[in-house]
Image (cartoon, rainbow, N blue to C red; front, side):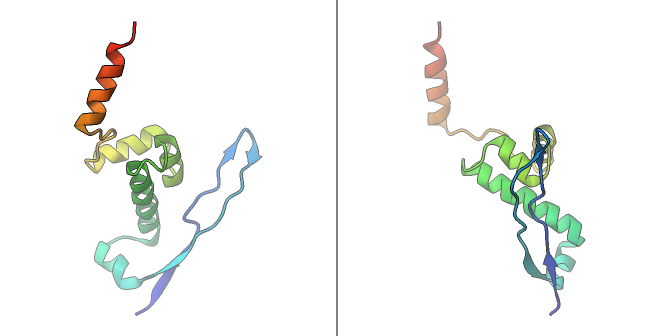
Amino acid sequence: MPSKKIDNIIPQFCIFHSQLPTMNISFSVNDDILLSLKETTEEFTQDIRFWSALMWYRKNRLSLGKAAELAGYSKLDFIERMKLENEPIFDYSEAEIAEIFTDADKLP
């Protein structure tokens, strides 16, 4: 089965006019995967970046801002995409919410 090589998964970003070090990540994908998903190479690449960023955000490995950066979105666009995918922006357990309110009650 033929495969396509997906290049440039991680974009290059400039902050304060200085180039940050970047790396290119690539891997091969069989054509039938893209056909099954009914996606172009570009759409598939964007989805891989979004879902990877979301996974690392969910696991608290990336902040919202860094996840958005990895996905190639602004923070607001990343949040909007999460909404479109019915993904919660904040996903706290009951214990975490209780801790937040307990801490808030201690404020003057």
